[in-house]
Image (cartoon, rainbow, N blue to C red; front, side, top):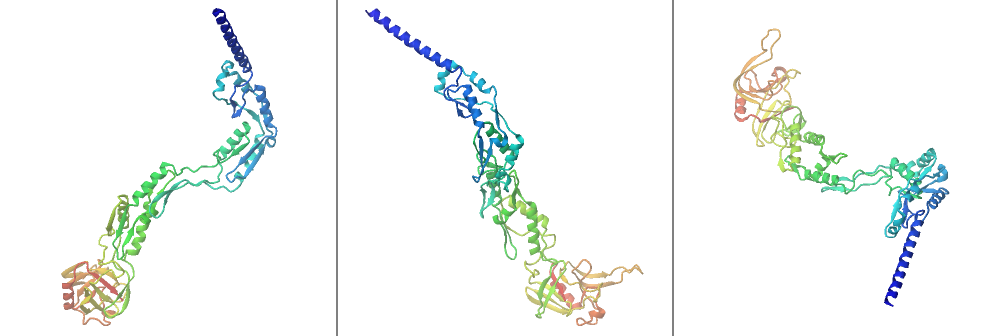
Length: 468
């Protein structure tokens, strides 16, 4: 009995197994002509469909096909299949994709998705498509360029200014995407999502932009204070205007802009050659221009020094680099300070002012009022002091000899062209209008005693103000 029951069980098991195998084989036979379950072709589900059904579907897509093109502003343009004479061309790709299936492995498709990308061949009028693309509103309207993320000074430091997307269309991408969508019978193209606009080169996440900000902020650490009559400060606010970057986000401290600033700085604080005002001890107001005394910044050297200060992040107080021998007693318009010699050419009078007080004063005789002999006005300084010097005039072309050789006891030079203070015992008197008839060759004539007194008081470098 047991043996008989065992036999029945095996018969049942065998029958079930055979049925399962037959069913599996029957399903396998089905998949010789149909696609697996969970099969997508170009993103469309064709589970269990035959190649013919796929072909029919593709042919059906041509009828009434239209592609909606959505711009950034949600404006929609439509390209109809009929506008471009769109037709589907059958090929062997669908059959080939089906043949690549192993029908006997169909059960695997129940647990995983299978996809196949086939080449759908379509034909359309290329010229008509180009015209339709060129007429899209996003293409015909005025387009704006995108702006990359970039460093921007916020008043304290450079920060990353986010990128701005423009409306300029990338025509190569747009053409490619439209053709791709038409080929795959897709119905909606979002231009922004498909990258059909020109993108900014750098975004807020671009490390190059942050690196540029960091480098620019290093320069902003410098603070240079020029000690003039009023402090002139070069700090982050000014330095930020001298920093630039190129399309590779390479930072440059603009040397030209620094030099231009130094040039303007010099125009403000240089005093040599400028017209200045003076009030004489008698209360007379006068102006004086010319001469060689005053401040003159060496622009080239100071530009280099300032650039280095900024690059080094220096926080310092300093004077600018001056041209050789071009400094003055104080900053400001009356840069000769409170110790100086003043000569009034109109009144033929001079004063030696020491620490703001009159230390001596005297009548003088200045140059004969001719173009060749008149005493030059301007601000000068004492360049040389000599005792018992012989003054030698220019050579007379007729005789080949100097027009004069004049020994003096006290010589105080103010120009290298030969103008200075000296004693002149040949003059009958000093002051008044004697200079108009018996004036000097340009020097400031004094009595022996006055010249001796002035000589004893003066120092090399003392300012001399000569005016009318």
